[in-house]
Amino acid sequence: MAKDYYEVLGVARGASEEEIKKAFRRLAREHHPDHNPGDKGAEDRFKEINEAYSVLSDPGKRANYDQFGSENGPNPGPGAGGFGGGSPFGDIGDIFDAFFGGGAGQRRTGPARGEDLRVDMELTLEDCFRGVEREVRLTRQETCESCQGTGGKGGERPSRCARCGGTGQVQQARDTAFGRFVTARPCPECHGAGQTVKEPCPACHGSGQQRKTRTLKVRIPAGVEDGQRVRLSGEGEPGVRGGPPGDLYVFVRERQHERFVRQGSELHVELAIGFPEAALGDEFELAGIDGPVKVKVAEGTQPGQQIHVRAKGMPHVRGGGRGDLVVHVVLRVPRRLTGEERDLLQRFKELRGKGGDGDKGFFGRVKDAFR
Image (cartoon, rainbow, N blue to C red; front, side):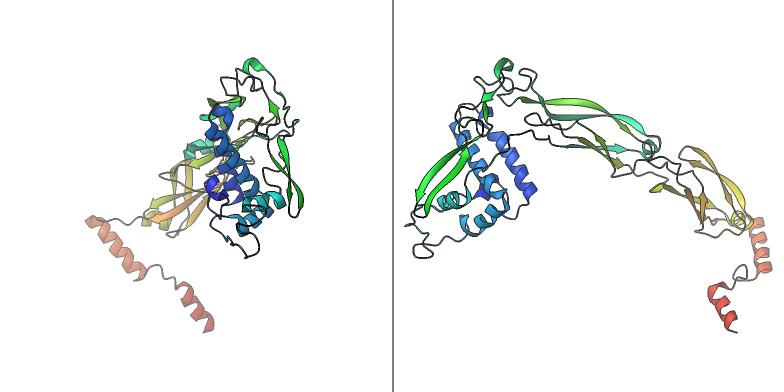
């Protein structure tokens, strides 16, 4: 019975291309013969992983495999289409080898860009306002210092594989009832790399790379927001076969502030005032993000009214000034009154009449308009 390629890679049948790719890279790195010298089981497992990925990474092959090749899919017996136990191919896996090329197909042997890396950095609102320089620690693959990335002991440079001629593949021809078919498999000598070394580097086991932990300085610009990222070019995983390295992305996580609420470049804050200040108007001093801010409350200011203080918010991350500080007016009502205060308010109530300042409101003005 044919192998279940999804089970080999440890992914679900509905896995995306990216999930399949990640699973293959992880397993290939774990079971690579260079990392398991003398382990025949690891070598066989590595071949299985390559075979499974070669089919599931190809949309056409995967579609046909899903229809005919899975252990859990249709498996017609003798007489049901002619592909049962009496088939001249002997196994359904042979059918796919014959019609769809089998193996790993054409392998890329040229330079390949390294993987990108990501780290998260938590910042306060003040950090985002000023911009900061911070250190981040990350563990990544780096060029082996012992062999300088060649993979050979003492820096020996790899030579072209004699068995596959540097292609990374070996071909096999088979005669079937439908004619002669040629399939390609990863070269067992170089494991598809197309190059070999006489003696692998003992430090990196021939991979040319080692995992290292590094500390990097990152400059976060002023005005950066939660969820934005800063890119450090070339600080990701190293490239393969001479390819360029990937990038490092630092994602900003902004901590919630106890007083301010941020909306883009605007800062929102509450200002609690009493009835006399709201009715007569007054001037207040607030603690802004970068120092004291004077806020002028106009006569007759209503609860919930917003006052914009220009250019006292957050800086624009691309430069060009700052946003506003938006002050939300909250009316503070005293819980207890002195006798004199009560008398004054009672006198004010009598002067103004019950209900406030005599404003008829929106619906009252509408009624007057129709009269």
